[in-house]
Image (cartoon, rainbow, N blue to C red; front, side, top):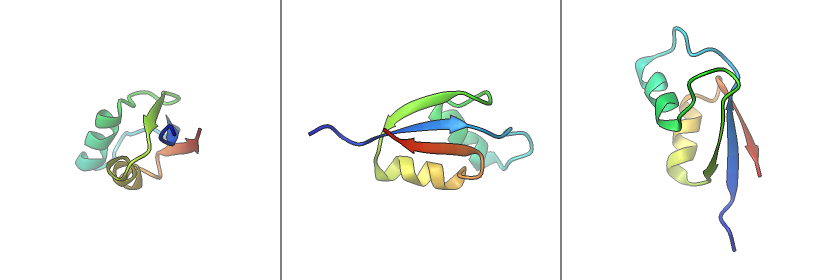
Length: 61
């Protein structure tokens, strides 16, 4: 059985956010508004997404 996957899209500008939130976006590979990436769902990813939940949209695939 394949792992669950999530699609993460940056929907708001990262201007003026905290340093740790900026680092999480860079770790996720999201640089410009509208950028999307697909990840395997795990606890580490969910932790990163929790920190930047106000900037991204998460969809389960």
